Image 1 (cartoon, protein in one colour):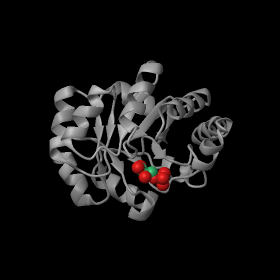
Image 2 (tube, rainbow, N blue to C red):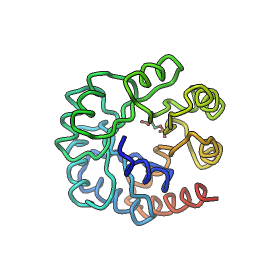
Image 3 (cartoon, protein in one colour):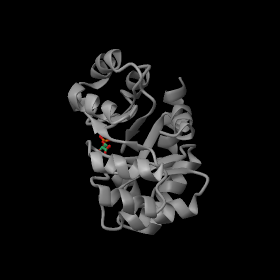
Image 4 (cartoon, rainbow, N blue to C red):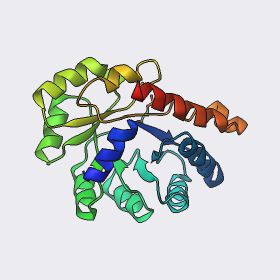
Length: 210
Ligand code: 3PG
């Protein structure tokens, strides 16, 4: 993983998920999060418009770090790289995706939830992974156990992270940053209340820097 992305993740410590079926809305979501100080965004491939949203956000906010999430295959990796993703996040491990990302020199964080999966990722040369679904896979205690064995691995826990437990995850030294959808609540987005997102971003930064 490029050290530039690691440095950015270390500085912000929170990665919001951007999900929308409309490019205009995705741009407003991104603008609101950037206004709140979060400039690493993960655009998830969970809507038909996700690739267009990714491309539009990457073009509109070139100074931000725009990645693609929920990337499930090597073909999707190629597509998100083509659309401007600066990093890739997957829910699980896929060797072909790892090799596409390596060839393109784009950091990929695959999801792992067990020691066996992490050992597989480690043997493919990966040292930064997503821990998913974090809360159901043992939370901060599991991260401590994994990091005591895999001493050179950094984690991005995602799945069940929220303002109430963010601190606990970030207190684990091996945790680089946490990802989550709590920063982009559906109801506020549907109401067009993007100020809520800016406030949540500011609050998350406060918690992370406390
Ligand atoms: C992910 O894709 O990383 C998770 O679905 C996010 O989980 P959360 O909605 O619990 O934050």
